[in-house]
Length: 323
Image (cartoon, rainbow, N blue to C red; front, side, top):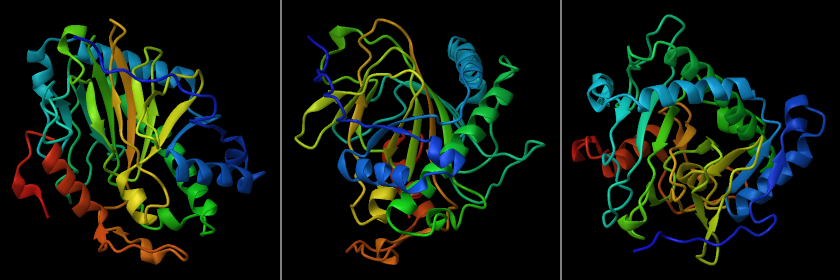
């Protein structure tokens, strides 16, 4: 038996975009055009000068490893809630009807107020759960969440400008975003598990935008336009950004949501820090609202769409969660 294989990435097949000009406001259009072009092609982008410090990333990783290296009994104290907060155990996510359950496990959280409480107005939003055995996790996780969210806002302004829209077009209803963050842990994957077993099986991301901080282990693979799987190796100082299904739908397919997967052949633990950016749940997703774009798909709210997709992917949820 063997691992699923992928080709080495050709130069510039996944572009690297410097966000400095978006950060300082000096040359917004050139960065916006680069983001626009990349999103119309593969839908995957490396970004540098993103503003998240190495120290902040290190603190988040340290807290995540401290959590995942605990026993399952201890992690079960924060077992995933009905609002999708807490520990998602291995095998609880399945990316397709014919796919094997993923090997990964995750710890998931979202927005909360300064004193802890958060909104509970949607089936995918509720109180965060923090493990008692990792006292520094809340601070590290929330600090990372807010910083990654700043990057997502910056990118969404760039995408809007690339489409000749007002900079805040995609952020008009972001008073209480439905965004989620997760620490995602991939155990060493034995070769004997075969080419149809994955850390996370081939899938497209459900929401608007994903901001991913890889470690140096490698394993992320992306399907190119010809249907070939290519490696998306770690690049120091960068984040990986990819278009999700909702942004693809919102742009009438102009921006591509591309299948990707993880195969951890390293023999080591692999850890990713992930932000899934989504606006307020009542945000209407309709490409016909964007001049020059159109779609035959009916409009749907962000909250309705995510509720439907989550019901299909996660074993702890039920068909009753679907809109």
